[in-house]
Image (cartoon, rainbow, N blue to C red; front, side):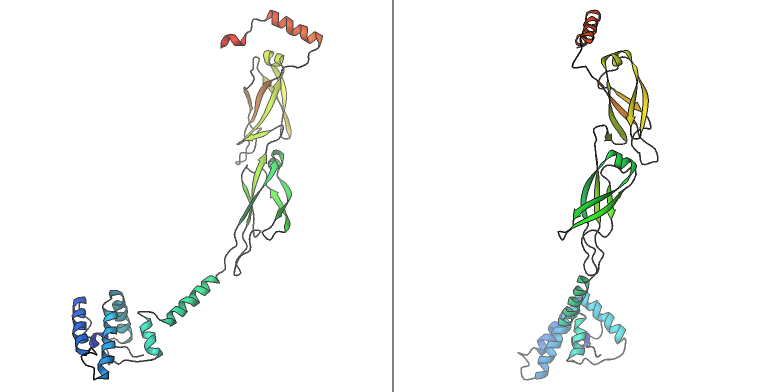
Amino acid sequence: MIFKDYYKILGLEDSKVTADEIKTAYREQAKKYHPDINNESDFSEERFKDINEAYRILSNSVTRRKYDRTWNSRIGNKTQSAKREEGPIFNNFLNMFFGTANEKEENNKTNKKKNKVPKKGENVETQIDVSIEEAFYGVEKKVSLRTVDGKMKTFTVKIPVGIRNGEKIRLHGQGKKGENGGNNGDLFIKINIANSKKFYLNGMELCTQLKLTPWEAALGTRATIDTIGDTVSLYVPQGVQSGEKVRIPGKGYYDGKGGRGDLVADIMIMVPKNLNEKEKKLFEQLSNTSKFNPRSEL
């Protein structure tokens, strides 16, 4: 491939010149070979095109450095005539600096290749409810969901022992389809642990209610209370009040560290709604005997 010596075209001895010297040389050569001045010579018109071409590359610091590197690597110190070369070889040379249709074609090809890069499908998220007992012991559940194409599909979801409320289970490859051979997305199932009539969760605490009669609360008692898979006995001190809490360590929900939180019982003092005659008389006697007045403390 024959390269043009742009420095010689501008009348410069070598490449060790400043930007101002390039500009001055360009003006001199452009004035000398301008077609309006040398309109009788076909050579001057071709020379003028070369001068403009040389200035276009050498006046820009980026394209000048690129030209110098190319010249030094391909030509070095060898002498080369400043010959204008037409056709695809010369066009390839100009492509290094300005880009042409060929370069655009290459860019289009590159973009098409990028578009064909495998792309993973989008993830899909849904949620299901499980009971506290199911979450505590772990369970396999059959879940029917509508897929992205509108069809119903049944999945087997393994709920691990002690899963936390709000945690997500990941089913690989069950999301939206990938593109260009990419992997399918994943299906994420968020677990909502539903409260039951007997229990509700507060973090690691398993909470329940302990209902007492007025005389149990006043006298104190030993009561039994259910936890998951077990029954425990606890002492209730005399004078306990509604709203107070009794805590049983290690009988709550899994803490994720191999242990369990506490079982927390909310005390509720229940008053009988329907009294028989004997019960009514006993309460009347208590009312006449007791000096307790909770309103006096207000």
